[in-house]
Image (cartoon, rainbow, N blue to C red; front, side):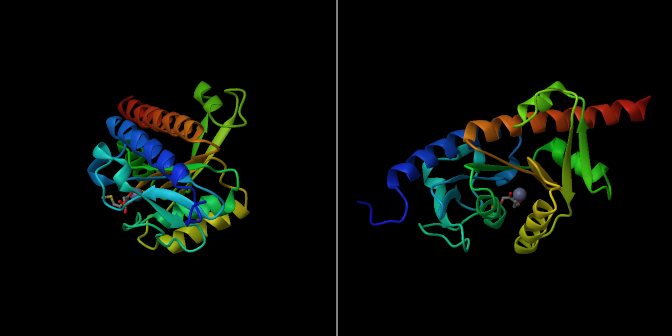
Length: 214
Ligand SMILES: CSCCC(=O)C(=O)COP(=O)(O)O
Ligand SMILES: [Zn+2]
């Protein structure tokens, strides 16, 4: 019987998965300069999350720690991601969420800055929209809300929660000039969504460039 309120075996497995996933994401160029954070649920009270400021290209199991979902406090050694509150908001809200990924790609950064003061990005008509849970056709629309960037993560988490109350967030949200958050019922599902999002963001950037040159 573990003395801790989470299973050490589950923590080690999550840490391995997070380290491997982080390295994979870094290879795509979506987590430059120590940016981004990743997490996995351990149980209904705790998640494993990246330690703040770690190089994601070198991410190892030692860069993962435990935080309590109710209060964002560390429950194992380390300083949790500065954006932990955006991960715990998802786990508190969605009992079926098992993984949360946040990246800082070139495409999400350019796109959200180019969207100026628009409050959402509309993705429409793409076959890859079928990578998102619940979609079985390209003939659909995915609206991704864009929040203004802020250093007040508690306030941003409250705004995201309110948008979820209003039903305007389904699979992901963007933060202007910053990046994207997405979540899933497994790390595989979450990663698939992230990969689809990053691909479609890059497509949208390229389409805008082509239009501006025409
Ligand atoms: C150098 S990136 C600025 C902070 C940020 O947006 C981020 O994603 C990484 O923060 P963390 O505390 O998780 O390292
Ligand atoms: Zn960030």
